[in-house]
Image (cartoon, rainbow, N blue to C red; front, side, top):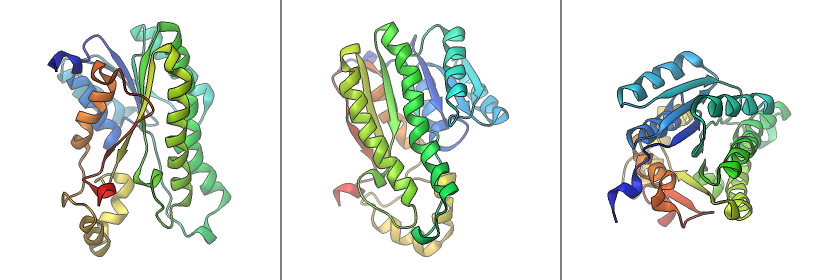
Length: 254
């Protein structure tokens, strides 16, 4: 397979949750493959640091501070990205939060907060970018799911519900937008070292038990998603849509 199938030269990728963790890692991976980047999160100073890293890779980067739970802000960020670069070829919806709480203690506000960021925002971001991609004749959308899309984990009910929803949303959009040459896929990270999971890693016993479940014997790092996100963003995946690619060290196979 020619290596140029994986080139993103001339492409523009918009990544939400790009200021840290997996979002930052995927944004820089796309930049490294040749894409210019629109970086989105709540915190502009952190985004500016990521933009500087993308610039060092020879790519243009546009940082945008936006709250993706607000549809008006989503629409404004997409409009600004198109005004700046002219098109959006790749979308990665990586913004996410988690709240750990027993089911009997979970509050309405905590439930709504997780669902708003992890599911509702994903749909409306896909909707806004999807309109652009339909007009321009195609594109690649990459949602981020979770092992909780495949099985349940206690004390994170809203997160499990949201990520299960993103899995089904990915399939629904893949079918609906296939006639417009829009590929909609998802990456399913396993147990990764991120701020979102830092509470687990601080507990030595929990960390040990989790690592025992991973056949490859270690937690994932943001760089471990580079190949998957470049693959789904590039021409190499043109005949793949509605698929979840698990990057989990073998957890689901065990």
